[in-house]
Length: 220
Ligand code: BG6
Ligand code: MG
Ligand code: MG
Image (cartoon, rainbow, N blue to C red):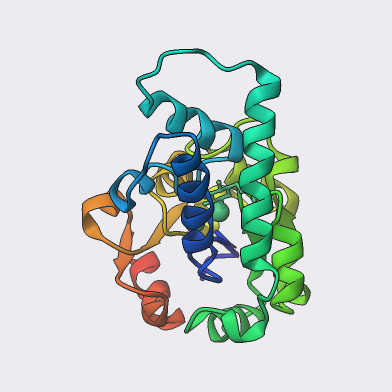
């Protein structure tokens, strides 16, 4: 068995990936740089400021924004996002997730969160899942966001587990890259077009079956 499971939050534990998209889309519309779901795949897993930079790069107006102008836009996006997550509750835990956490606990496998989000601890609390986690990596814990491995290596180090004994679970291409470059076994949820680099890919979280993950981990 692996000794630790490290979970992404947005799009894995709960569907806040959709809320991040809707909030960025609202902001992007307001500044005249419309974005679509295809472009959004490039924002998944990417921290707030880097996401804003990617959107601004799409714009053709050319003027470079100051840091304080960017901060204002990023804060506005977060306000839209906070409105969307206000009413999150345990019914918003994605299928299969709580059972997987329970199986981890039964097998004495350590559990960490590896999220790029500043809002991660508050969301885990709203979902009433905080108690499962031995360690939480959020945006405040890392210098380099995904796809850099730091998010996942920080979690493993805090748990005292070697990277090759960790399973990382992600819905974002940047996240899979982060797990892979950390030297961990990567499990991805979603579309093969974006996630082909994963060691094991499933279509949705209901297919995150503990025994199946273990079987694929054993064959790595
Ligand atoms: C990641 C999401 O988990 O967190 C990204 O996949 C998001 O979409 C990033 O931009 C940062 O989140 P926050 O809550 O700090 O703005
Ligand atoms: Mg995600
Ligand atoms: Mg995340």
